[in-house]
Length: 275
Length: 291
Figure 1 (cartoon, one colour):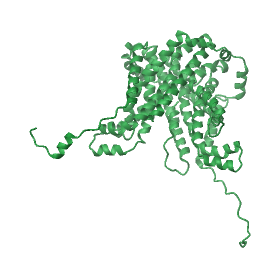
Figure 2: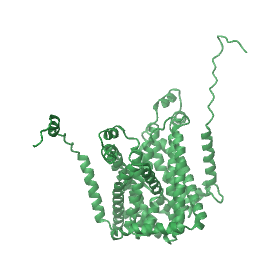
Figure 3: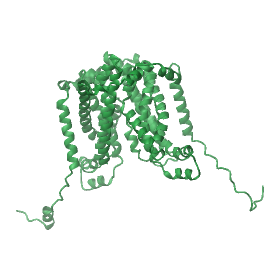
Figure 4: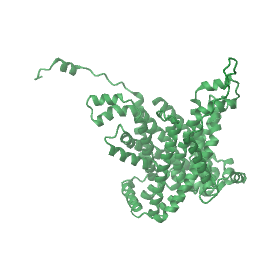
């Protein structure tokens, strides 16, 4: 033991770093194991290798040649315009009808809005199940049910919109101001009157902006529904792809991207105004 | 007036309610929605006469699927779904690695004004293209199978991940950045020591969220031949092998919900931190990241 002196240098050692938490260690090990199991070249892995990617990329290939000769004249072609109009119509109908159904579902999907636990559980389960369906899977099912055309596409987007808007809206319900709810209850409102006068006005701006966001999603999604025969611009894409007409494929994609970006900018401006 | 009223009731009767202010914005939005719905419904070339059949047909399909589930197809379904999960996981890693530098270049508080608009434009374009369309273009280059699907998911994730990561980076506290600046840190050191430690938990949670979304996307990539369970789904539904389709559907829904649950738990734990302080509201950005 040494005696303390006034000229002893101050302790300049760095404080030790705290060890990583067991959670962090577990998560890192889990992530690395999952990466190796999924990426490695074995029976249950996809065998991802960068050298393969590079050799495939350096070979001459048709899509890239098509990109160089991109055919933008397709954008004024009546076939593109018709297919595109159908895509927009499908997205509009699917989004509006889906959002209308989603509002009551969103109310029932929250602790505040559900009249009892059984309804809450049932709606939550229903919502979780339809939420795990990708839009293309809905399209496959509805093509099998009602035949090809725009109708299965509309129905697919309808269900997809219900899932998206319900989830996003019900997430905001749990965070609303409880004051109006108490006020409504105190002045004798029934459950549905309370929802109508205290909850709905609070979530309406969020709900509207989610519905608009969902329209953007649907516009993007409706471009691929045609691949399984559910109408819209995807049918045109599929047609050109089967012909190997890559310049036209890129032309359609370019037109689609421009329109999606324009719609997104408009929608973002309106949503900013709403919130 | 037959009954004499008390003064309170009389006053209540004569009270003038304030009029609701007239909201032009609401009127315009409502009008646009109604007009849009009517216009689209009347002009679309859909076979509406088949709509009344849809619920019945869907019910028939569901009954055919789930009353004679073909359990022999289970190993094939599980294998396909595992491949979809693998495509989603590796694809998310690719998207995460490529999006982080782009996000730094697109954040106004880190990068110069010269690069930001260009990078943002690239991210917007990437965001607008659905994964399946990327897969269609990539299949002739990389062949049918999981590689094309993985790259489609990876490239498709860059746009959204880059945009939302850039927003997270822009929202970080400027104090540590200034401190590092004052201590003579270079640009790289500033990013390494003052920006990344602040934003990494949120960005990690964002990546996991994207993984959940990518599982939904990779489950249908097989429709165009890019690997995963989608091939089985499409073939069994197209050839009306409902027993097998039912198994595939159950596997897709079950695995998706399972992965959502695990990933959601990990995400909340990352955001909350080990101290277990009450969970903050999920950033609005995450809700936006739906797809």
